[in-house]
Image 1: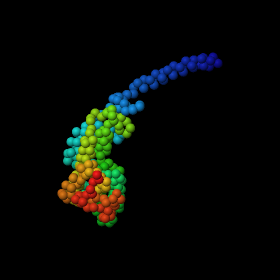
Image 2: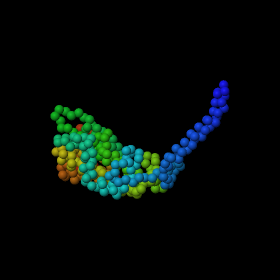
Image 3: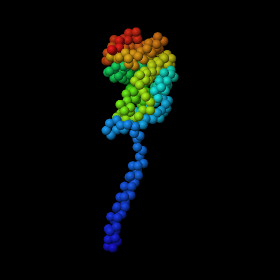
Length: 283
């Protein structure tokens, strides 16, 4: 009984000491957590986080699209204007699909612009790739500017998304950039013209893959375009169509334009052939 009485009398003191120790550890842990750099507010309870500059050729910082990569726009403009960028895209595509470099493969390339046309192109790409080949039929493969299928993106396209060019070209009034609901301070100024040119040049380099594919497969690439309602000042008419005209003259592509968003690549009547017959852009 004596021991029990002694233990009971000392328990409150021990508990208080343990409690104070735990509280001290929690305070130290909290102080050890880095605090985001504040460069201005964007509204109640929000702060602008510091952006991290990175050259276009870097490999870090874009393991997720939710973490923006702040590439210098002048560096990216130089990169996407270089014909080497087409070779880079082609190498990335071959990593996913060796048929794109195999003699005899019939490759299809897709384009879209304008509201409602992206889904039409995805359906076409999936249809071309998923339709079983009949006995003796030439192997075929469809790609588009995002990747070799609707599932697998080119790493270069993934990086373009992580760079968030249009979000950066439309900063908030306090100068911070809003990406997926979080505010960041962009170390560079990006204009809407630069954002358009970067994406436009990316699309031109994608188009130029057709020449590399034709040389590897021995067959002109079949090009399918869903551009109903597309505007003259957007990517297709300003950047891609001029490139397709040049490739058509070189014999690298055969170009078709969808009459409607429901055009089916297996129905010839759904399509208009030739860049000379391209639909008029929307005004």
